[in-house]
Image (tube, rainbow, N blue to C red; front, side, top):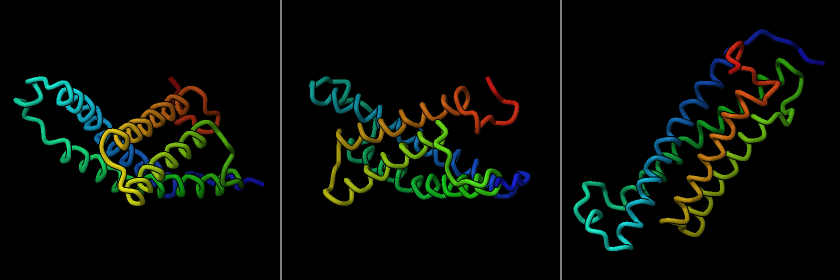
Length: 159
């Protein structure tokens, strides 16, 4: 039976953790797009790539990795705090709501990214595409949050 507790510190920690994590993953995605564009320019031997003031591909790839590495614990903690808050208010940890489900998929993609990076040394274009796929799922999560989630209404912020 749900406890129906008022929003507590868990809710107030859950949302900032996820927002901070998503902002760091946005930074990784932006640099990932620049990485892909620059790599294609280099492969096509375009002079724009040579005269560019962009950092090296290795530097960009390292930035993407570090953003994901730093944001992953925040994403994990945000999801765990959300499950705890759900248990406090609804009596269940997980309801397979669209926002919860896509958040889990996002977490799995970034966990796979880190496992492949650490385990077999995945780098370069393939790992960048995986990082971009993770951010694509974040965008789907946000759409689900605002339009399709009966449990995550954001108060009166329905669009």
